[in-house]
Length: 88
Image (cartoon, rainbow, N blue to C red; front, side, top):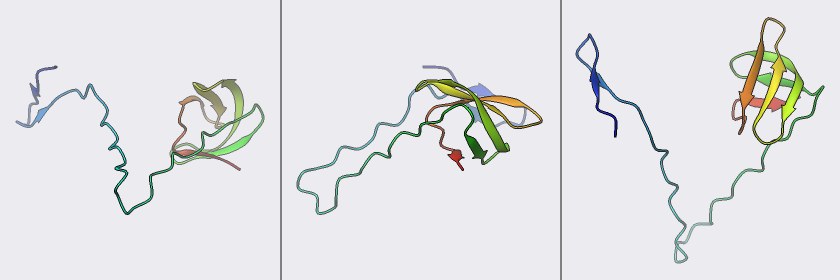
């Protein structure tokens, strides 16, 4: 586990090494089991919008890993699961 490092302002910060585990659904729960969202698929030529970079066009696809998008001012490699990107 990484040791927290002291910043110049006196606050401590560390590197996160693990993702939070999802809670399992109990069979006796009165609530419905959570449903995983369907994975997003993009093809070359798709027009997309990104929450940070704006409008763009897909110019390359690495199946299930990443897509290369031309936003006009920059080309960015967006990694899966594409949470901030939607197809138009």
